[in-house]
Image 1 (tube, rainbow, N blue to C red):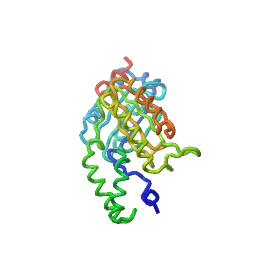
Image 2 (cartoon, helix red, strand yellow):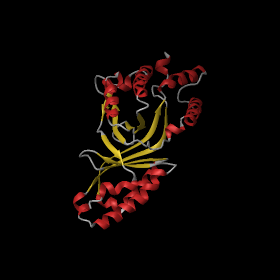
Image 3 (cartoon, rainbow, N blue to C red):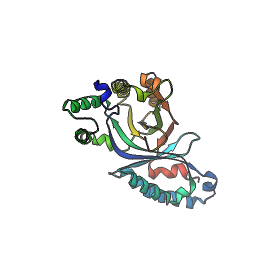
Image 4 (cartoon, one colour):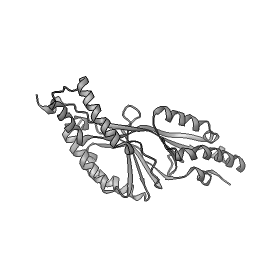
Length: 275
């Protein structure tokens, strides 16, 4: 039996920080009915909680003013676990400000680094040692490789929220339709297409910061993509160029796009105070 049919088809991945996006709409009629002094007091209370979250060394949060009808605010959270994300949600829900916010969407995921380029080599090396896939010895060999990679990639697995002015977030899938199915391609072919796709992103490395997260088993799509930049036009240029790449043109499916402008907690009053 050939190696390509005996070795696993699933690429190796590294997982890091837990992520939560919260999209919120302000209940403007009841919010505007409040006295200005009450509005200011409520916003000050929220800023006092969100401010330290922006600087938290073990997992940061950020607030963005959302453009368009899909909502008014985006809350982005990086934490070390789902438990910490859950605690953050409840901490914010207890704020008086959240009595005047209505959720419009959310997205749960985990930062992921794909190891397509090294997976084939790792599998082949273990097979050459006489190890059989999925046996305890094989799994131990895989874990040894992954642990080395985790240490080397730790800053990328547990990133700070990039300081850029603009965010663009969208979820995406790989096609699983009747005619084209990404998951039925051989590992080597998926690796080739993924590499070519990644090379486009690298050309924009000085203009945009990209964070990929996996949501397989956590939310409605397979991945979440966060782009951060000082100029929002770079989102259009990068995504448009990638649409012509084979892996996107043939296999990519995109969800809803959300775009926002960074708003420090101390400046929330500029967005929310009506007097």
